[in-house]
Image (cartoon, rainbow, N blue to C red):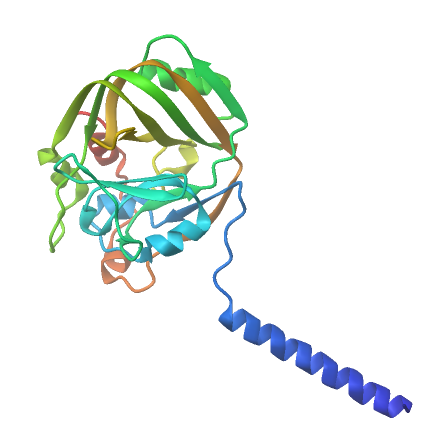
Length: 271
């Protein structure tokens, strides 16, 4: 083969490789996040402002994590993602298994890879539990995903009714939130501790959901007394994906410059 023919062959081979790469890029599924990263759908302040339209399916969200919390379109229940399975706690207090075609307006997920596993052999209320996690995972400027499988003397949770348009702000919705009280129940705490610098984007501090072992109930955690259990905690250093609504007039028109700190306290805590 002559030098000229060699050059022509190399050029054709390069063109074929570039074309194949482009076609693969067009046809490839979205890349899954790194196992140690957190993927988030939209922002907490958008949810506070009443942006409840879903814009990512559960099937797509599942590509980015097997563990997490959030909500569903129209605030149709509290979301728990555990071991790759989604659970929905509606305002009737019951647990449902949502279809993967359902969409979420807000969620945080990761692939839980515990770097701390610790037995809990003494009673702890919610405040004492958070202090224990802070002691065992002290890096406050990193995220911490945690799972507790345990027995609870008492558990108090909430969910909210599904909303219809025009959507009211979340602080208005939670004024009439159903609250559920459980006694002597076994189940799981699924949650995140997020750094203070995420204010406006996620919930600074602790955000926890509960799911009963027998699927008899669950929801957003307002308080509890843990008798015993096992804590698995994963300090997470990467916040890899933040998916914002790309075709949402409600999101585009929301005033996200407002400081919604007090609103967040109202909706996160027991009134």
